[in-house]
Each structure stands twice: as structure tokens, then as C-alpha cells.
Length: 310
View 1 (tube, rainbow, N blue to C red):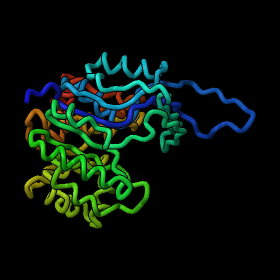
View 2 (cartoon, rainbow, N blue to C red; view 1 turned 180 degrees about the vertical axis):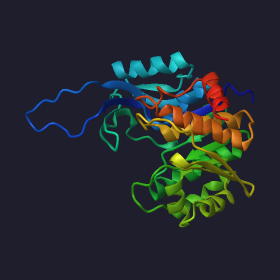
View 3 (tube, rainbow, N blue to C red; view 1 turned 60 degrees about the vertical axis):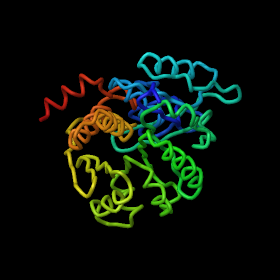
View 4 (tube, helix red, strand yellow; view 1 turned 90 degrees about the horizontal axis):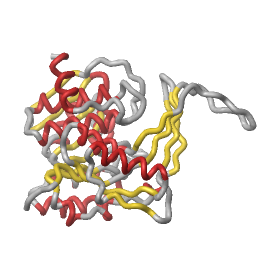
């Protein structure tokens, strides 16, 4: 089948209203002036998609926005950067989700209205449309809560035979770290976790040992280790790339940016070390500006950044 998209992404998209430098919220009945508020597109799936588009790939995004000014803003940015928005639906019942982020140098807190992101479920993925993509990226796993639908959908994708799959597991808010996740791994080509998630899911104190356990079932395990760098295990071989040193302004979307850079390299057929460098470069540059995608590089900028740091 002729593939019209490089990557198919289903998931969350919302507005991030970022208010930096807030040490405490106003007392009831009071007002506090802040030097700046910025509005950005947010949502892990959307940030991943926008990153791929900046790197020159052709992604399609399935999700939902409201019929409001924020929805128009999101659709406009998607089109500006080259994201296919033909599967992005307008809701007649809910408004576009908004997350207000109060940030300091040490921490962040949020006020969130889920809006059109409420009720996201892998069962709503358009599998017929997905056949038109070379690769699919999956997020939003919640352990036993939605494991059955992930098993069902990933099995169907795996049976297609010509679509590769990446899976960013994400943090388990329940604290259970459901071991049933190992049933999904044989259908995953690229498994993303951070080092803490890896330790929790594998019950291994040593990250490399845990990554090797994951890679025994998945095509590869890619572990994000923050300021240390990133590691991948594939076919029993370990690959590593150190992090790039930058001044962090806003860490929103750093992990999703890493994922986009790595998958760009993966789909280009680059060696594993180069895929890790692409991930580290995108993740590092993304934190240098406010917003989850503002600092994300275009392809030429990423290539130059990596050359400058060889």
C-alpha cells in the first residue's frame, strides 16, 4: 500500500498558558502582576507531532479541538508547520483543553481543563486511516485501567505487518506499575521510558539491567536519563549518547521532543548513536525557550547543532 504519511499520531492537544516566575499564587481577593504570560500549543502527542513536522517528516494527527479561538490557533499552527490536520476533529460539545502552568526555576504547578482531551482512548484510533502511515506513535498508557484496549489495538496494528510502532509509556499515576505491560512489548519496535519508569516497571534498581529486560521483548528499549544523556538496548547491544549542556528555561515537552528527534533518526535509518544524538539535540534545544515546541529545531538547525557539538 502506498504510504502518504511518515507518522500517524493519536492523542492529546491543548493550549498551554505559561506564567513564569510565579513563586506563590495570589491570596483570595487580591491581584498580582506578572511580567509575562505566553500561549503555546501543548499536549504530549501534539508536541511530538509538531517536532516531526519541523524536522521535515509528514505526520498526521488524530485528535479533537473545540470550535473556539484556541482550536483555530492549534489548527493554524499545524498547517503552518506541515502537520496533516485532516483527522483533527472539531467538537460541538466541548471546548479546547487548557493547562495553565505556573513555573519557577525549581518547580511547576498546573491548573488544567481537559476539555476535548477528556475521554481519549486508543479504541477511537482510525485503523483504516492508520494503514496510510509508515509508523505510529502511541502514548497515554494507564496500566490495568486501559491495558485491554492497548492490547487489542496494538495486536491489530502488529497484524498489519507494514507499520512500525513507538510507545512512550509515561508516568503511572496509580503507582502500581502494572506488569502486564510486558504483554505489549513484542508489538513495540521502539519503547521509550525515562530511567525512573524503567526501574519501576522492571523492578530493577540498575537501569541498564532493566532496559535489557525490556529489550528482550521489545524491538529496542530507549531510556531517557535527563542530564546524563540517553541509552538504548537493541539485540543485546548497548548504545549511549551524552546529553548536551544548555540553560533550561522551560522543561515542558522535553521528553516528547527527544522522542520526535529519535524517531526522525529511526525513520531515516540512521545508526543508533545518531538517533540518540538527534533525540538529545531536540530535547535539549526544546528547553531553551518557553513552550513545549518553541525551541524545537528545524532539521538544518538540529544537524548544525550536532556538528557543532561533536
